[in-house]
Length: 329
Image 1 (cartoon, rainbow, N blue to C red):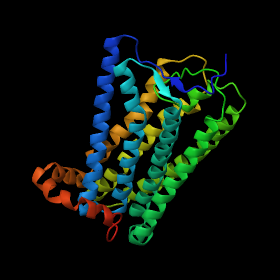
Image 2 (image 1 turned 60 degrees about the vertical axis):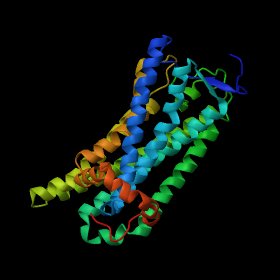
Image 3 (image 1 turned 90 degrees about the horizontal axis):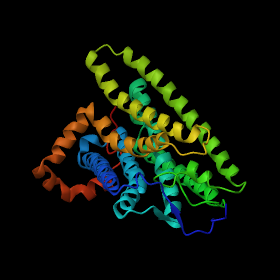
Image 4 (image 1 turned 120 degrees about the horizontal axis):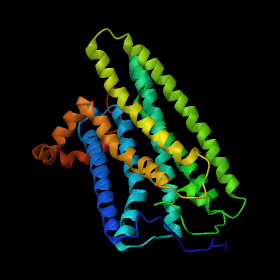
């Protein structure tokens, strides 16, 4: 194969060469994208405008919604445009941008989910110390660290990936995904990226063990709550989080942890769609289904009169957020 490391573009995977199916792909992805954007925007606005939700848990949830918006906006629009105009092309700079921001938002998602597990542990297992531990400064500090670590992590992956020489520009995925880019490498520098991925999995596994251990303590504490209503309230804030973590981890593991294959499969495509699109789309629904406070805030938000009255104060709300007042469990 010839060296195409200086190419100005890559070729992404087509969902189909049949024009009607390309249009169908555009429509389906557009529906998924709009659902994801609207769902996460509603969560962000509901939390920002409702002072009852100005607590650490919802502050982290708002950051998660922002990260989810970024994740889905990095990959889906380009795929939709390519299907609409019957093209496979993505420029080299666009591919670099996709890799950087996809890893930035993806890693920040997982960091925030880990922080949210810690928040629920303190709220349920140490309720008397909650206000002291999860204070405004701690919330801002933990979130800032999560974003900074994610930026560094993304820079390392992007730099190591695109320092390789590529012997093909045919990416067998609907976006620039690192495992598929590694298959195009014809230099030994791919070992650096493989090493980073291995290190990432060790880190992710450590966080996963931390989350599982945290929930063992949480469920042990919940079972000791005497009232049924108290147990239900505690579980309503924990179970959605556990579902989101499980969905994100196990679909990502399939894509990044399994041995590389020389042939592309429909299963690769399906799991990439699941871990790149489904968690950002489902998060707003998962967190609002069993959460009465979110449901109440969303009902207020959808009330046009309420929205028109509170919209002028949105900038003020954001300036005062996060963790206004005393944190609540």
